[in-house]
Image 1 (tube, rainbow, N blue to C red):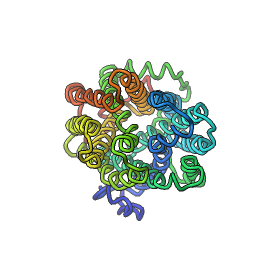
Image 2 (spheres, rainbow, N blue to C red; image 1 turned 90 degrees about the horizontal axis):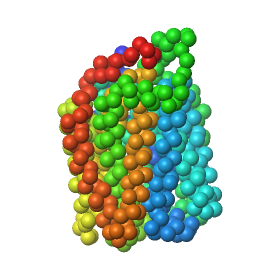
Image 3 (tube, rainbow, N blue to C red; image 1 turned 90 degrees about the vertical axis):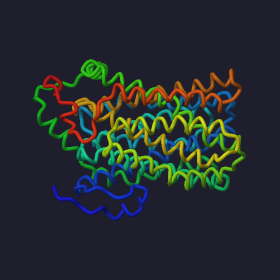
Length: 432
């Protein structure tokens, strides 16, 4: 297929570096999927940034913060109900449905009168947002060539992470805007204006279209439970290894990322504006971890790259939360850089290891495990708070467990870089 020079919007994404040779269709899909994910990340990052303000406005106790974060993140557990549907009716329709869902729930959060309604609305927003992120990965993996799949996932993740930068920029005005943090959630309604455009221009993946054509006319959809059971039964070693690595990583990553803005304000005395500047400027460098991990994994392999970034995240998190005023900004950049890079390679693995007929289900299952790990991680922080007397010490303990991830990846994961999806995970005739 003919290759195309990067589109004009690519000039805004300096952090992606030199672009590979992609087809016009691949550029269009990357741009559309990344734009959708940009707004999703803006919506999701508001909670962490505004934690201190939300806590004060809604009267939430310090010891309950971890449980509150766990309750909100629990919504992502149910995203598997949506991702499974994408293996049945297609990636495109379900992806657009998720955008509509998380946008409406985010906008409604601005009107939450108490902690209970806030949690309920953010719970629903997480259902749709998590599904959108997972399906975006599936679309990129199915549309990009083997030699560029890692870079594609990393590029989309970096643009998605820019949504957090936009959120941090807006957070700098939280004490100036009328209604404070509520105004920032109202901004999350912006994607509604783009739904019609995305509906016209976002195509279905070619691999799913071929799968649909290959399916017998008498094909019947199975239940959600049957689909997940079949996935585990067909690929027990792969799924178990992936789930174990993702769970351990997510326990620490969720807590380390969630509490970072509050840690800077409470321990280092930073103002919301200073946190916003760090997130916006430091984050601009940290998000390079996304395309860097993708590019490195394409060139040198998924296994060594995943091991390197996850070990780096372990070290950075422990140093950040145990430091007493020593280079907190640099440690935060290192933490986010390695955290994002690790997530890129684990997400890529989660989509590559399974066939097209089960790819969305598998990606949803990976998301379920990651969310469960994140919830347990945040709940563990609250539990350890009573023992250690500090959320920061609790997070350092969790971060130390991430040293297990490189061991799991290097001993149990296959190498997938540069291989066709059909070679990595061939379709079974009885699953088509």
